Image 1 (cartoon, rainbow, N blue to C red):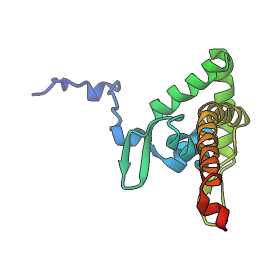
Image 2 (cartoon, rainbow, N blue to C red):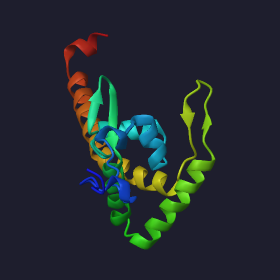
Image 3 (tube, rainbow, N blue to C red):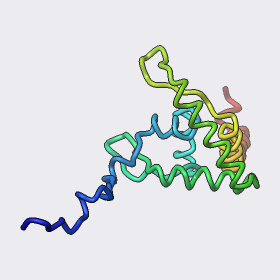
Length: 157
């Protein structure tokens, strides 16, 4: 079989590299670093269903696809009416800064810089989703106070 090249074109220098799906997934801490927000904020966004959805869970650890994180960032920028060109410029600037300034906290966990634009955009998402929830909790607790103030048991104390 001399002179015969493989079907996949491996010896012509133009071979295609395929990434495995799990290689493109990040744990919560790395996903937060990728977004430019603290891990605690990403966890809270997930609890309120205001953030990117985890693609998989390994026990208590959530794993996020890079594509989903990029889609979430694009959605936040679109809601803030920031152009795609400005988004690309800011995200590229952020990636350069994040790649050069990674440090560790007192517990030895990796901690990166915080992207101020993503801080504002995710805070807006938290406020828009969390405000109605807080108002509902205040309303229910107010009803509880009214109910308890009209019970004879409280009068005897």
